[in-house]
Image (cartoon, rainbow, N blue to C red; front, side, top):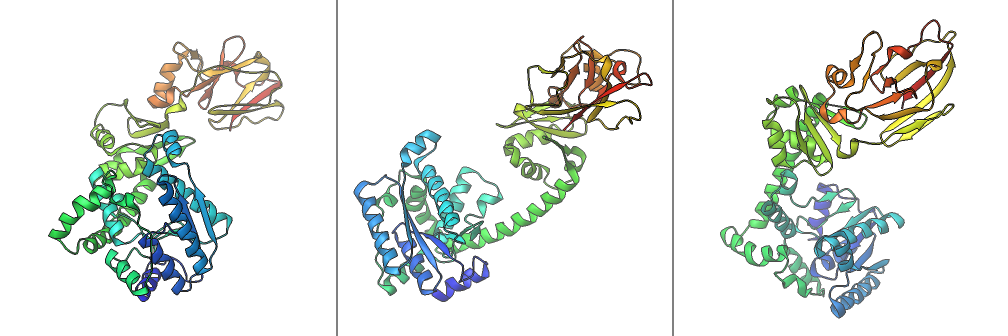
Length: 441
């Protein structure tokens, strides 16, 4: 078995045999095998044990067992006692999820502070099969179907290519002892129900089920890599970003194979479910303005693109700028102001900056979101224009209209629609003596 594990480590480039590992050891059969195998392969390691405070004296005995095991191998030992139930209640998650979160966060802290290279866990082929089927039961994409990866960041799984029977044979061969966790027999947990009630039936149909699922997971992992590259190519062609706003070109998306699948991958960072993504794709031919929400973001189907913003992008309130003030920094807006002499001044180009006749402005200036009924005189025009019509002309998407700010003189005149156009009444002319330059940062 040592040769098989060594080969698996090398083939999957998990680590070198001189890297220093933090080995997660519960005291159960799997982790005891892992510790012994690494010891015999002469891989330097420390041991870490989690006491979750869930099984009383039995858990205390587990901790004592692992501590003695670390002494046997003469390796550094770390133990942590967690208030798992309290953490689960605080976070509103299951006890199992709480235990998983606590242990991996702690493992990483120890790895980092002790300057170790990787965290090693004792997951094996049967664990991978259980995870794959459990994910399939709950509904999953390709990432869930490849099950447990041999290497995920700084977490490595040297035994993932081994079967449960391989581990048991090794225990017998090496005369190792281990601790049994009675909770593994309880069918209160979904994984245990799958393990005890479902998988035995499937193994009657296919005795090589674990190996078959491992091969399937490898193939799915390859397919996922192909999809990832295809999605990355699509993202380069379809996506562009301006500040906190993301735009996706609809025509480019429509030209992709499996549009809903590709779009779901592009929208995954924004929290949109696959069912919502299917509705978004169905809305491609619809008129502009269709809105779709995730827990964190708002997506609006515009004329030729999808526009994605944070749901908190809409902002309310007014803010004042006093004479001589150089900076205004509020949620979603950062302005820098500078007073300059008009002589020799060149009016800057670009929407992010406005050059205004300082002597025509009345302080304090006000910065606020635009409102229905607002009007101004866009520079270059002599007449009034409703700001609502101006934003339509500018093809501002629905979910960005609420984030448009205006800079207002104390006499109530809009001097600049921030990020779009100054007002004709405040433009720099031959009569201007001082210029107020307002730049959006």
